[in-house]
Each structure stands twice: as C-alpha cells, then as structure tokens.
Image (cartoon, rainbow, N blue to C red; front, side, top):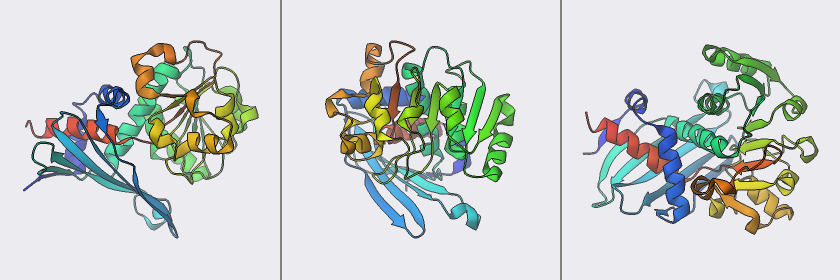
Length: 317
C-alpha cells in the first residue's frame, strides 16, 4: 500500500527543505533537456468559474515520477470552502508502483509557485528594490511577498485587491513580517511607485497597461496559467528588454507570452527560458534601467522537485 501523508505532516517536512534551491535546480534541469513534461491536462469551468490542472512528468534517471492534480474554484470562499485543493501522486520511476500520496490540499503548489517567484527575482529584479507591488490579496499574493523577503531588503509593499475585506485580511496576515503595507483598488500607484511587481490573480482582463510601466521595472506574472487568463497588456511584453518564460513550450499556448505572441507584439526568438538565465546570468538583467518580464505558468518539474524533497524527508523518519 502507498504511504499517505496529510497536510500537517507535509508542512512539518517542508521545514527541512530548501524549496528555492530545489526549484532552481529543477528549472536548470528542465532547460537542459533532462525533464520529460507532457502538455498540461486542463479542465476549465464556467459556472461556477474554476479550473483544474493535471501536471506530470519525470526527471531522467531520477527516483520518482509525479502526477499532480490542483484546482482553483473562485466562488468557494463564499461557500466557506477553500478556493484551492489538490494532491500529488509519487510513483517509483523504476517500477511504476505508487509510493506516496501527498494530500497537500494545494499547499505544495502554492509553495513551489512562491519559490519560483523568488528565484525569478534573484536574477531579474533591479539591484535595489524600492517598493514591491502585488496584484492579488489572496494566498499567493501573500506567499510571493514572504518568499521575496530573503531576496531583497525592501520591506515596503503595496497590494491591490478587489475589496476592502480581503485587503484588511491581507494586512492582518502579513503583520508578523514587520512590513510597511499600503493597499489600493487601482493600478496607477503600483505602477508609479514600484520597481518589482508581482501579479497573482485569475484576471481575464489586463490589470496593467503598457504606458504605466516605467524603465527599470521587473514584473513577475504568475496568475495567468491558462489561455483565458491575462493580467498584462500584451504591449508590455512588446516594450520589455527581456522576456523570460518558465517553459517556452508551455508559454506558447498559455499565459502572458501567449497573448503577446497572438497580438503580434512579441517574437518567439526573443523569449528566454528561466533555466537558461539561471545557468547564464548574462541572459538576465544587466542594467537597472531595463524592463524585465517573467511569465510563470507553472511547470511540472516544480511539482516533481518539491514532492520529491518532501517525500525524502517523510520517508527518512
């Protein structure tokens, strides 16, 4: 019988894992061609609105392969239910036997996504971050900032949300981190005062316009992980000095890069992959005046890396 681990056990194991290092190594392996990742399995629902992603794959010559199912149903909060749910299935790469079931309730997906934001900022953010702007006051909007704290000395944050209740909840949740937090319902102040911006929403209409983006700005766009979602005006990618994809293959069919390619403002040959930037930092930001964009659609290698690391801790006890 496979071993089954619940959320509390998984959270305890995560305390012994260097998640950012694992995710960074995963991106390098992916861009090197050492990872097999089939196209994302996806279900998109209209009524009620939501989506389910099935991501899976393996690192060649590794111990495991992983199948992850994660959902986001955006009306669940009004029903008193979590917005996100999910699990990860960890199989032996040698025998295909199911070794572990990680009932993580989407927590591992959230953690690995936040870690990817931190890795991205390390290579693409300006040398001095003056203010962090966040679109999205939910779980990922909080976790992205928490993951950035070891990367930058900046403790000045402004967050955009759709309502005062969720913005107040954001302020309360982030209180232990000793941050200066301002909230807003418009995008103008974020664009005008922040040189590191994270977009973490399921928006289907752009939240930022091209004319708002100042030289020296870095944007990590991680909310748009389907063809339907779109947080950035495609022209922003057209004016950027550097555009980075977590997976070029994946971003050709989803996310901000997909929309920019469809609009004809970005050429595929001008896209760089995050694993390549990590391996060769000269492909990343070279000047504090550059505009840099990272499109993070979420790649199965992140799920493989974080689940593998957690399973190694859990099964070593």
